[in-house]
Amino acid sequence: MLNWRRTLLERVATQSGVVTLRQLRESGCDQRTVERLIAAGEYRAVLPGVFLSAAWPLGREQMKIAACARNPSAVLAFTTAGQEWGLRKMIDERVHVLVPHGASPIMDGVVVHRCRRIDAHDVVNRGDLIRVTSVARTLFDVGGVIGVAGVRSALENALDRELVTLDDVAECVQRLYHRRRPGSRQIRHVLKSKGEWSAAVQSDLENRVLRAINRVGLPTPSIQHVVPFDDGTSVRFDFAWPHGKVALEVDHSFWHAGSAESRSDKRRDRRVAALGWVTLRITEDDVRAGLDACLADVRAALDARAG
Image 1 (cartoon, rainbow, N blue to C red):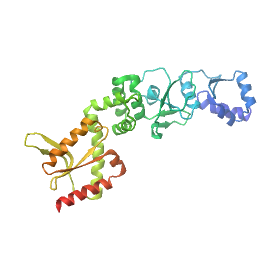
Image 2: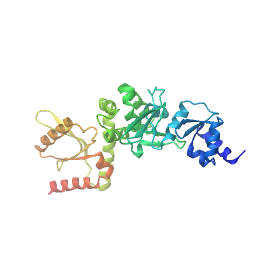
Image 3: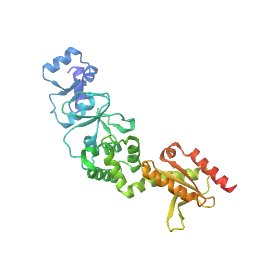
């Protein structure tokens, strides 16, 4: 057997019968040989620049690989990505791919979605030509296809199997949310409708803040400190130093993004200020940045109160 043919067959076998024109040439086929293979019926075009060996049937697996091979920016997404991750409620026989705006690949038999933002950590490269959206990005996108109930079930499944964390999902929603972007409304509704999920996301951030407080040597704070009012109501601070009446609140921007939440926070800060408290607020972006500058502000506030 010719060396180029052996190389080609080995490559085709690892890609479920699919091969690109570039790979044919890398195997040693010149243009005339490629044309001869197609004329002889050994290979047929599936998508522009993508071919299938006659020894393999054209099924969904071949179409998934072909779709990724067709365009280097294409990634399996929506229910197709959900099936790759084994998530619940991903019943859909269509092959879905996500491509950036400006990319217009011709893909007969493939549902092509376009998005202005596909970040590098939204894409997982499997190494067999197939690229798939991350679990968090998949859960974000798929709501427009499977609805709120489907997203809730898929998210519970992914969390139970430890494929993703709530913080991963909330970060993805915060980064990508737009009222016109498919999936935005559904995933946001699912996360906000389940109180323990919002609490879990917040708790993860608070644990990181507490570790940073201990690392920089600040006095040990009172956690979930309650401040009562004369009317019988009260507020609860994430962290507080009651001797100096300094409080630190960790605001996950996903849960504090709306105008109603912002107004509530400002009312709360005004009420405790009347009792002599100063409230400092940080976000998950501050947490990820390392917190040193924010905790320096806390130290300064404590020193000022002590003075």
